Amino acid sequence: MKGGIRYHPEVDPDEVNALAQLMTWKTAVANVPYGGAKGGIGCNPKDLTTSELERLTRVFTQKIHDLIGINTDVPAPDMGTNSQIMAWILDEYSKFHGHSPAIVTGKPLDLGGSLGRDAATGRGVVFAMEALLAEYGKSISGLTFVIQGFGNVGSWAAQLIHEIGGKVVAVGDITGAIRNPNGIDIPALQKHKSASGSIKDFNGGDPVDMNELLLQECDVLIPCALGAVLNRENASDVKTKFIIEAANHPTDPEADEILHKKGVVILPDIYANAGGVIVSYFEWVQNIQGFMWDEKKVNRELQKYMKNSFATMKEMCETHNCNLRMGAFTLGVNRVARATLLRGWEA
Image (tube, rainbow, N blue to C red; front, side):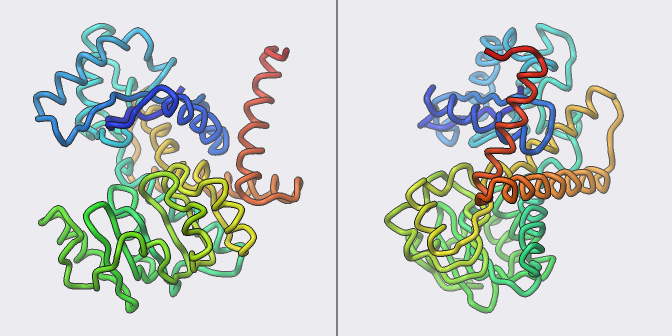
């Protein structure tokens, strides 16, 4: 099984179970040989010192070391966790089971992490978007983009879009939001955030209210932060042609229906943000083989997986005359059901 471990104040069993189920369908859509898993601790990592985070992680690993394993359950970073936390899990697990670099993915490179893993989800979002836009005779170059969330996924997506020639006209995160109809200088914004810890006060754009960010006019809207940010209160006012769900479940069911009636094309999260788990799979494979890939190979294989998954999802949509979300879930459920039947587990 595969899934992230998150440290967040709102972690609870219902959320973990729901996210594990979503991971099941995501890995099936991506066609990587995993089931879904998830885990977490209810805490605010920003309130903890580095020493407290390490102790918390090591005690957590002591409690779950018999439940995880390189062929059983392979954790990865999620909200509130990072490569350092994966390194502590690896070290603590190894005390009980011997050195096992394949026990976690998203590790530091010096401990067997994969090149390209840090950018994987954001890069996967861009590959997914390219596949979708090609269906409509469009490309990233020359289109306008609004990105909600400027953490790992949002900043990488923005950087890659900027490099390809797309125009990011608005960006926001928990610290604030800015817009510039002429396009935001993404490298300059990244330097500003790295130095100040905030998007706020960046002089390359005008401040905009966070509640208005998702309503800015653009060709492509990319929510990269929390779930349910598109809902019945704001869906009618969204001014975009395409939505790429880089976050998990950013569109609630009522908003989904409203946007569908408006003709907005939504690329669903279980496909759009699968780049992270795909490159985690590559990292696991490299650790098992003891042979590391160069970054070009990682990115090339990621693009191939995203492209092939989109083509299969699109075929499912045409077969069942459904939208992309239903096509993605149908693909994922069908693959799991087929594997279940082949193993003789039918009722």
